[in-house]
Image (tube, rainbow, N blue to C red; front, side, top):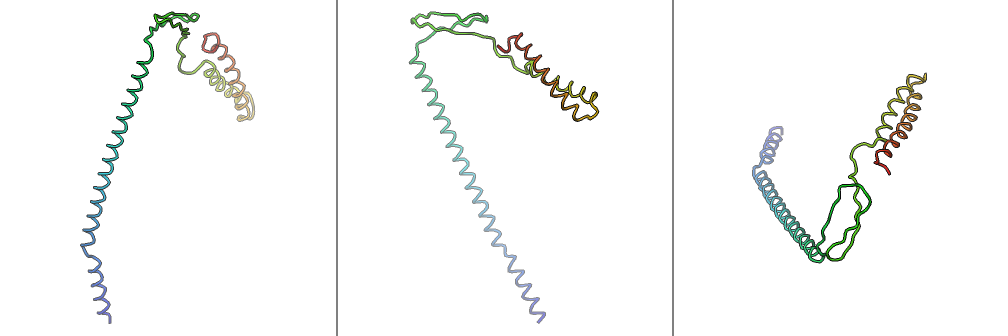
Length: 161
């Protein structure tokens, strides 16, 4: 009985280790990878063609707009004075207002609020016995004061009108 069970176990082991199933699964994987690659190539070509058509339509639209509008001469003045009126050859008059480009970076109000909050928090910790309460109160008061002072400086420099 024991020999029969051992013989059946060995036979089942050999039957389970059949190489033909591995070959078919590897062939299936290879075929799936090939199909995926082909579909990706087709998709990328379709996207490229759609993009080219979109660009061509945009160029045609721009050319049509340029043909429909009369040619105008534009004069840009570097000063920040009152609006200027310029008459063109076609008899069209337009008004342009030129101002300085907007400054980038932190405004004086933001810088003042940040510096005031830090200074107020440090002062609040040193003055009040309870550190957290003093830091919060000092930070809020300092930020408000710094903002007001920075806002006034922004108005003087012309950043805010």
